[in-house]
Length: 124
Image (cartoon, rainbow, N blue to C red; front, side):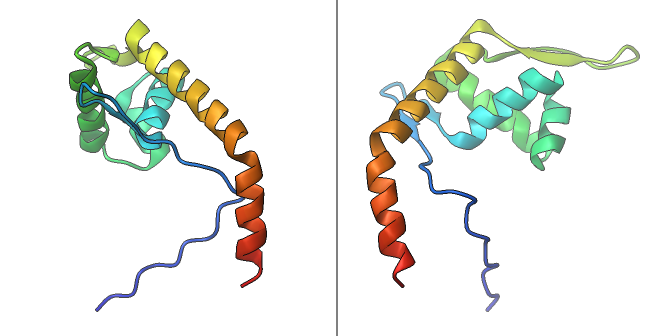
């Protein structure tokens, strides 16, 4: 049986926010990071390389977000001789903005509890 690779502890304590909406849309850190990378790098392929995920997986993540929202989260132009590209739609930008706002609020709300858990875990 293969041993599980040990992961380095995070640089600092924090929370990872997963949001499940009634519509079935699930927002997670990876999907939001992908949208941010697409906005920064201008393509799904470049964003996938930056995040070390395959183009296929990145495209499937974008499709899942778009289906869950019921609207496209990116606008893609096909590649070819002059290259393609992708930009976030208003809805995609709004997803990122609202998610990051919720994440910031949750981090502020849990700061004391995180410190207490850090102290508790340091006693091992």
